[in-house]
Amino acid sequence: MGGPILDIRGLEKTYKGGTKALAGVDLAINKGEIFALLGPNGAGKTTLIGAVCGLVNPTAGTIHAFGQNTAKSWREARRKIGLVPQELSFDMFDKVIRQVRYSRGMFGCPPNEARIEEVLRSLSLWDKRDAAIRELSGGMKRRVMIAKALAHDPELLFLDEPTAGVDVELRRDMWRQIDALREAGVTIILTTHYIEEAEEMADRVGVINKGRILLVDEKDAIMARLGRTEAHFILAQPLAEIPSAFAHYPLSLEDDGMRLIYRGGDGTGKGKREVAELAQTLAGAGIGYTGLETRESTLEDIFVDLVEQEQAA
Amino acid sequence: MNWRGAIAILKNELARFFRTAFGSILSPVLTTSLYIVVFGAAIGGQMDTSQFGGASYGAFIVPGLIMLTLLSESTSNASFGIYMPKFTGAIYELLSAPVGVAETIFGFVGAAALKSLIISGIILVTARIFVDYEIAHPVLAVGYVVMVASAFALFGFIIGLWATGFEKLQIIPMLILMPLTFLGGTFYSVQMLAEPWRTVAQFNPIFYLINGLRWTFTGSADVPIGVAFGFTLAFLVLCVGVITWIFRTGWRLRE
Image 1 (tube, each protein chain N blue to C red):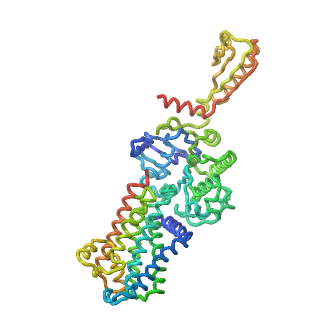
Image 2: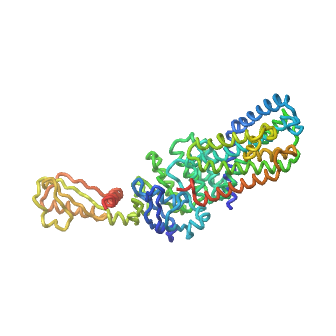
Image 3: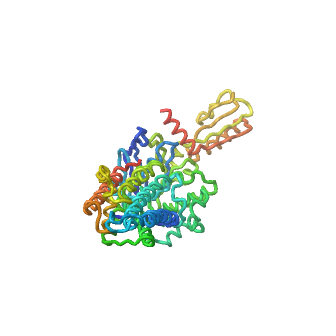
């Protein structure tokens, strides 16, 4: 991975009604990575994308894309940026291939039918190229949006909720498409409500709420730092207290001593190892149990915790 | 200047026009032809031609009807052209593309002006079937209609940006432009009016546009040709200024 392809500093946006959508966002995106921006509704995700892509006039702050200030060198920057917005927005009566050609032309690229065919084939749209967009299914329409955004071969691609409202099969298909784009060297910033999507796709994750970035880190580092393992041992006999031999484990007792609970680990597998050790130690100490429930915390748990802490603050 | 971008917008807008060519072309051609047949050929045959500089009444109203078409088609094509992407949300692509005010004007306004010129050309040819007219200054006539079509396409573009609903899109063309065109001497010479209406008519800007075109057809009009040309040019420059300001500030475009 190279240096930052996108560098956002102190970005603020206050809408006419006084709503502060962005409150001093600093964010650097590395070349070639997939960055997932997570946040609840109204967190400022779409405003942030809009500010970079030219849809929103920022109130303060600077945006540098490919080393150039987008407020000054906007033509050069926009040539290399693609956007797939959340809403399906195009001329529904037009043909698929014509809309993709239109997008390519608008971004200043010379006609290239071979490239248009390649893009359409990669999104399984080639057979539908002469269909009016309104005749397509919702999933196909979303693919047309992606085809339009890819028509000018962007180096930086924004996907705003790319799989919102599509079925599971199509979502997984989209993930494969996004992976193929990463392989081709495209830097991707995606916003999503599906944390699973971020877990599956992203190299780095950012959490935004109330227009402020709460956290930015490598996905694995976040899991290591904030991830937890939870194991519930359902005991055969109640324990009055945790035996001193287990004092070094993060344990607690619940259900009148019938449930021994381990909450620990760091998302790297440490928690699973400790639970396995604990199971052996319990057996060795003659403490029987009739059931064991284990659960790894997900990125979603971490995200929810962060947002709840922010709401409470 | 991103020429490929500008041409892509122009082609896209023209494609939309030709996709609905039947309604887009046939409707204005039929309406205007009916005006020419009813007023020009049927009623006009009974009128005293001395009031129209010796030309037949049919020939007298042709420039006015061409102007009526130019104004309404240029304005509505351009306003609809930019309002639709705003309405559907497809404007995101225009705003995120490397196209500025010059490319946008060339694409949207150029296409709207071209559409209205195509329709006006068809009407002019159709009118020849019913009315025997001459064009005294053909080169100036072409230059003038291109200027008027461009100016009113720019005006329509501003309306399309300003409009926040389909109703607003229709207000200015239907409630202001249409009445002013009818009252601006499309069907009569201002000399036929009694005072104070003759003086009042001269406060109608469309009166100068119609007379400008009429001069290129007949060589005579109710106003000096320089005034008509100057007025159209000033209106065109004003509209370009307003659109440039809109793009700089993002008014009704960017949040």
